[in-house]
Length: 80
Length: 80
Length: 153
Length: 153
Image (cartoon, rainbow over all chains, first blue to last red; front, side, top):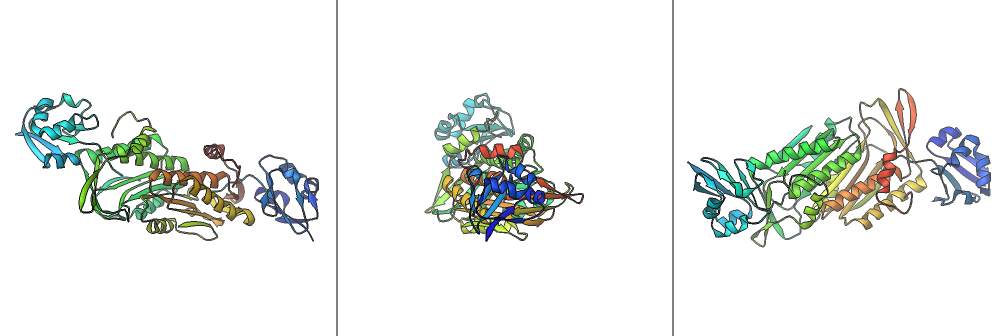
């Protein structure tokens, strides 16, 4: 198995796909490498969050995604 | 003709009627005399207002109602 | 749409709110407040009286003040008078605006003024006895938030 | 009544608001806000996306927070996802309360959070081009009024 990386909102356009797989385990450095330069640049912004296994990380650089887990890349929201 | 005094809200109960006539012209002293002691007592309260000819008086003691005019006694309101 | 009315008969607030929404297609949203006679409060009926020469002009002036103060696409102020039964709507204020805070604030503003600065008197029938209702201190405090120049519109 | 839903299809806000009003007979009033896709704004369509594992749990947490913060008899939070056409309702928040300021403030609070602290992404179709929408600075300022501990619910 692997880690599923899910691109949301404008990051989906930037990545050119909805979902990408990366080998597990996946940490912050591995994530930056797996998503490509454009998305990696966006991930540096404070207002871009990361969720792992359904939980938003307080410190995204502390990412440790295991086999079968989903990592969601969350750009700034705009609901309502 | 005369001045029509209109009792509103709880003042209507206190006066025992909706409307009373008083001889014109009618000033503050004349009004206090015309409405009876109970209502006169209420009129002293800051939050009880008076309208003359459709306009609320800033200074109710400055009342000068002419023949045919209506004087409304307005207790504290409670809408909505 | 700028609709300000005293109503002598029961009314359907949601129909009025929908009408406002339909005629303001360029507004981003509609905020509203509907006040009604509480049920299960031992209140058998409510009676709202007013003073014709002041009440509707005062409501119109309130609507104008809200339109000046907030950026609105439309505004409805409906207020019942007469005898009301539990569950009946008493008041409906709805505002359509491009930005939601204008709409929400206009509703808040109008309600505060209708509650303690408009010419209405309310009494309740409880256990067969009519009792006049005075505005609560909270209502006066709510009104003071808007720092109005005039005590009553 | 405590209804929090993500909706995939168009809905009728006033029916939801009426339902809330009907099931909260002891509340003195119902406040609501309905946000819709603006018409005549050169926007041909709006698309709202979300992230399933976070969005609905976040909305439920928001509803819980509003119920703790305000004294409510009922609360509805409805939010569309998917493709919407001009005029379509996007969001409906309605709160029933004994006192009107609780109802109005709960709506204000939930809207501020849905606008800039809930997991939705919005893009507009203009002249055949899709453009992503970011929250306005005003939206962040509105949210900051509530001095929330967490950045996002």
